[in-house]
Length: 110
Image 1 (cartoon, rainbow, N blue to C red):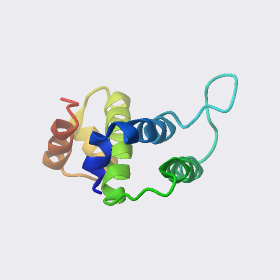
Image 2: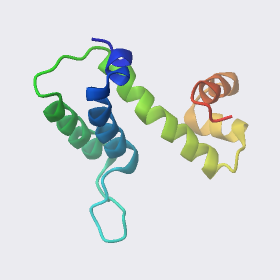
Image 3: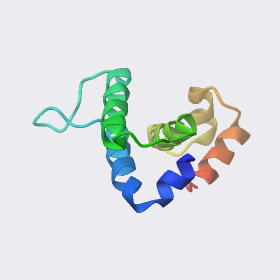
């Protein structure tokens, strides 16, 4: 099964949403809604939860799925930080500005 197929299947949407929420929201652990865990730990925890929800099911192209889940909020937050300045955002990310624009279009961020 490819990650695209997993996204398209109703039974997998809940699982993917849970993993996505964990990756995007980092599961707030304090009363203020902030999580002080390092990103590495939050991702590890999200992946463990994802595998638990798979319940023995198979998935392929997991790397692409996770990268897409992480890349979109990364780009969005850097653009917010730079107040929409794509040149500055590209520099911060270590990307060519054209590459950044391509990714922004891919994720419908521009």
